[in-house]
Image 1 (cartoon, helix red, strand yellow):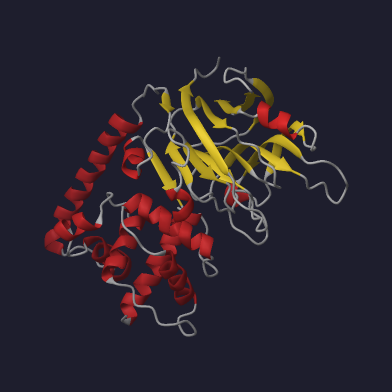
Image 2 (cartoon, rainbow, N blue to C red; image 1 turned 60 degrees about the horizontal axis):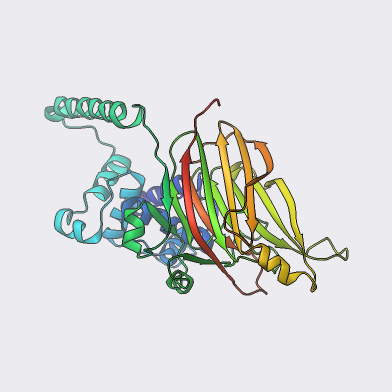
Length: 387
């Protein structure tokens, strides 16, 4: 890579990292961070840059002299430029047919490196094109963004779990675990996620990382989201399943998780394990410390009542209602499917969730195995604000 191209690549890569994580690149990316960046680039651009390559690029960008020489292909440079420039989503076939000249890389290189103004004979053409583009953006904003929208109820029963079918229905999957994701149809007619290692609650050794994060976009300030589980009985520490509201899918912004979980960690004090409902809020990049806003014990576990607990968790449902800043958490469970919802807590939290996700996880614990979390229903219901 020539010196001038290297300097542009460094700037491009740092811009991509800052856009994804919300902070400047100051140290090499970890594996979870590299996977996250790869997923976000794929989600926005439709094109792939492998997480291992991204990890190596971060080392190279920060210390060219000590790191192994990297020479990203022009296709990779074009994909990174597409992501940074918010180019329309594409795929490899479309790029081969329409963009073999890799226009976004050259556009980025000219704008960021060459920095030369338009030639005098083209100056008015450049100004006119800029004005036309600005007018077009204003029209699009007026028609599609600022215009009032009527939200609709969405209900998902997970009868078709093919990737293309999920995508057509508005679902996306972030940070896929190939083996676990391939078993998502283990319970016919339902979605099966697994309590894989990971968490959106960071700690000193791990960045937020949730595998097989199945998410969809939200609209509106006031709504209810609801998930139904079948026979989910967590029995190992931090094992849980539930709902996650997020400002972004990279956990750079704020989020709220509401889940049914198991806990037998009592700070060294003796005591039985418990199945509880937990709601936590996270500030994203603003703070590494989440806040637990709901903790309600549902069952205390012992050998004599385990069978009874399993019977009463045959059908479980979790619901989050959002009205402005107020979040309301509800739960139902029982041997019959029609058990009533009960409120377990309320909390005021100022954020703008753009996505909702279904999650199954066990924190960053390594010494437990994954169990299935079978989702039978998901629902989003618009609610009136100011009621």
